Length: 250
Length: 250
Image 1 (cartoon, chains in turn blue, orange):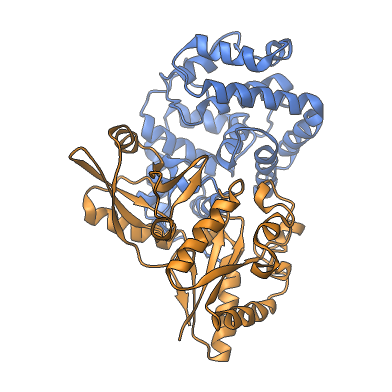
Image 2 (tube, rainbow over the protein chains, first blue to last red):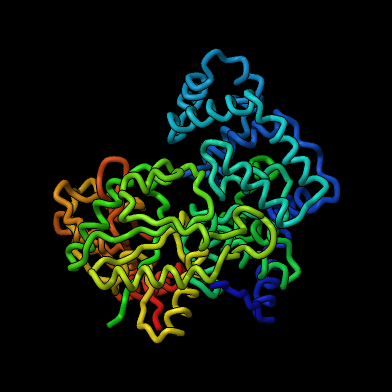
């Protein structure tokens, strides 16, 4: 069975009207500025590493503007920076101690294990393929290229499924079409009148995730909206105006 | 007489295939059937799920209860080009139907499976359509439904206050006790409503068939904002349709 997405003119009107409500929202403006610009800066190891840790932190814990996760991500210098982690004799213990000492963060054992695992696979040779994959998106921004890059992250790094893989790419300003779909997006789509009822708990299945993504992209394409921008507007609609220049991390 | 064939996605069962077989066999035997035959319709079997790597699942079941029909696999998985779903040899659906009808004669049914959790986004839906078309051509009465099939039920579960609180706070599973009736709970239809009780309190949850979580049986929970039994039932019906869990027949 192949589901065919049929987008009506009224759907497009609804999307545009919704987007108009958040056009001036800082979070939306930043997404447009970062993810729709013509030239995206090359991603270096340190930046990739920091965003990877940030994404791992947001799994199964609150990451709103005032959350401990956001405060941790904004530490300067970043407490789990690439060079800092690389210098540790036992990075898992270091990560666990750092996360625990900071306070307010859940899953510190799991996070520390994932951080250590990912540093190991990168240092053992995955850096080249990772940076090449990211570089592809600088010159070749298509749905397929973005989806392939997300699959690469999903398949190679601990703690990453389809959603977090896209969260990472989006936070590096590398994606326009593939977005992190979570319960906010499914809730919004269900209320919007998506033709099939969506369940956030089903999204761990990559095929189901891509099925929902296809529908979201079809809706955006028909409405003349970049998926990453509609994503930002939906995100903003849940968080209100809580994101400011000071605390914005995504 | 209608022959029922099941579709199945092994997602989540990769490290606990003995428990999977235990549950499926208990359910089928309680329904008056022999332990079923599993038909693998993946095009390749080099996967992460340990219980389904190569011929691992075949070894567990024995050759009499296992077939690998690579010809019904999704060629897109190998080529990554063209449409998302391309059945390698669509005419093999006739062979699958032959086998299913023959086995039905001695009260043994078929589950044909892939890795994807939900049928809506999986090539097994396309295979199901091909099998139904073949059945229609031959004038055979066939029903195909996602395992374990059946109409949603309502069940009551008594849990400890601690479990009750965690379920109320969003836990994604309801753990079952030591004496889990696998024939009943392993065959609980998707989208059933569980009324969870503890010390005079109760709440509803949309659940599916029991699955093995680390070291115990649990019911998976679909999060929803529904309130009251009627809303839960409506939402469950929508989810069943949205995930492709309804039966199709000719």
